[in-house]
Image (tube, rainbow, N blue to C red; front, side):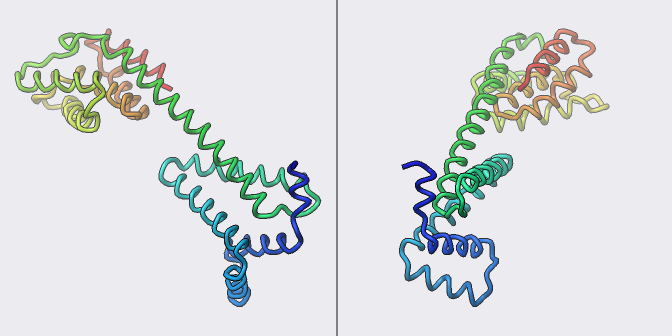
Length: 242
């Protein structure tokens, strides 16, 4: 059965019920009309199932959007509206809730797939980028330390970045070192600017946080005058971040 045939089979009663359902969900019914409609829902299993299905779809879209990505929620709503208009345009009468639900669900599925695949692609690209540059330097090339304990910790944090493990904790530790290394007053972290910054940027990339990676790389480019090789590599990675 074609979409037009399905639309032609919608009864006037279904259209009226669906319109009332949409008004109810938008909070547009008076208290009296709302009470009457809720009573009708309880007496009509088909209408009740349609009301539940639409409510669940709306809740699902809202929850998915808030939990995962505000842009995803916006895209779902825009596509749903577009597709509902397509249904309405094909029909000489208003589209019923089931048709709206079908098109909205299809649109939501497409958006979830497309946005999800894009996120996966970008994250994978940035992870590959980090892996490509993680061996650009030997630890000795960027480590200008002098504190035995901190040198050993830096080695361990580098391994965590390379292996992609304990990234949240590693980022926290490296961020602290990197921030202190930029203090105007000489301190134990001063000589760890290059090492902490380089592996912090790669850790952010592997942790799917390109914006913070960019921020760190910009600092490396601007403040690595005594290490032009590091500044050049930082600029290369910055240019390639998705």
